[in-house]
Length: 304
Image (cartoon, rainbow, N blue to C red; front, side, top):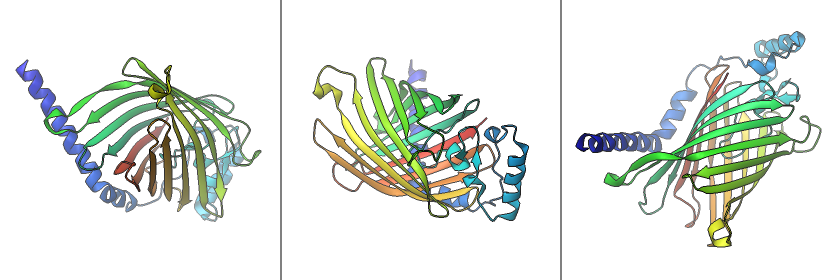
């Protein structure tokens, strides 16, 4: 029993050190990522749709550098290639995994309370599957680490599933509206729902934008237990080249029970290692007393 307690204490202590390092050095990590050579070409299974002429044209775009391949229309949904990876942790856009493709993401959602309240790290393992035309299914496993000195803990939080359905092929409707619904089972007994409307498109020569309208609540008989939240997220990004995107994200959340309003604004970055892997950073400091001190997110993604 003593050995198990010592092992558990060492695990939580090690996780605490890692999280504190990530919070304190996230900007340094970004600079290191961005300083590497930016030579990866955008390829992937979604491009292999049997249209060899399109692939040749895409390769010519990479060599000439006259246009960014991420704006090239690809796949059955005729969507731009930049939508095939998550550009903004806070804001989702359209369908990421067209029919027949699979993607994995590892999330570190770090929420730091004000006045020394500690940090909670919500970790998610996400598997995304393209099921049919404009239809996507995502499955999540949730774990959580709570930093609280000797009382720090790490454990399984729950699971959830998410489905997205785009109303039309890309460019057919303004904003490319996509319906999103997520169902959560947390701690083995709490159920939550999170419907959203996803919007996004290109703006200017190299700019992209996204907007999410969000409702979130627990499934419960009373308003007090439901803890309903109304929220939105909005993001803008500039695609520097095939590998690097920088931008800005904004988040607002209103709790219907206690009347709190949370405001966040901060930078977002994405760096692509190669045709398959990428990493996202988003740093959102809270702007008012109701908000947490920080909501920082790191995502590692891989397309199979």
